[in-house]
Length: 531
Image (cartoon, rainbow, N blue to C red; front, side, top):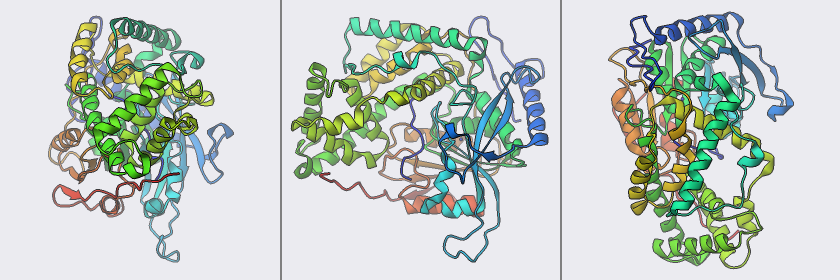
């Protein structure tokens, strides 16, 4: 399920059917006879070791690109939790210590409440830059009380990095992105998906099967122990909410406070194929929201005064780019990628609209600037895609017959053409995955097993559709859902909505939640601008 990273402005109960792989796999049961019990024991062993050694924080390596006020360290985890004495890997960790200063009154000291661990989503995104967010005004109250801790999950960056393809081959531009692909184009993409899946197996070997959401949850418990925290305080966004929910199910007694920001639907039947279908459908609605905003500002952008006219302008640009890529770098796929980002964050809307307007008026430079490839980032992007692919393909069964994908997405593309087929190509390696898949854990807790938790969601979020937040609320006993009504930004905690931030701060700083689900008015729409 494609999910974005942290917003530029500004996740030991019943182990039910834990691992049920296709032919050749095993089923694990909570009675001590299967791998689940071995992995539970392995997690306890690894956490005990991490608690004993702690994390030695010091200056960050230059490769991290972090300023001097951020400290870095590593925590060691087993590659395979069923074999805690086998191969181990190191995860990189970053931290800014709690300031202890009241943002409104510097003379007043704020008691430290421990570490707040953050994951920005993905799978495949790094949280190493998260501690810097404490210097933003919205986050200073939290940064006063908590050490802000980020980390790179297994496979990401320097945390046992995973790769499936030469980054030079990964970065292809310009490239096409047909809304209704031909049969010959589909065959090309099927061949690419098969090759990518083979590349993952060849490059990772036996380690490939261990990049999973369940292991991300286990790693989180080892990190908790390494930080010296008896109870975990965690905030996960997007995909971070999913393995955060797995953590809450596996280790409810280890939870202090948890925030689930823009929640993935954790229903095992949704992981991950159906969640991707829902995501593609939701992006169509958000794409229309963006076009409606552009249309309201036709005097600024000149792209049409109705959503349909704006769509015509966009399709005109697509056709021109297919014939002659902008700057030799930006084709239809690069255009679509840039506008997909606007589906995540509405503060991207003015820049995207301005670039499209300029391009259609004969100036391609703004479009090349926002949509053009960045060769210097190719290795990072390929690494993120490799981890994304491995985790989602390992996590759950996927259809292995292309006819299923073709049928479902052909139907969906008739009503939701904007994102549907690009989402297929992103996930299609999972149809040809060379290692056994797991069966998703049934996320749920019973009364009294888990402390109250906070779920944040925007009503029109496309990346993690709103019904996922309601499903998570239903499954985690004692959780409360706060909704930003009428808005669609992905990842709303600590953003521009002060109502949302009020609930976030009350929970993290005081442990206080509203008595029932609550709503906030939407944040202000972005301001249209000509430059």
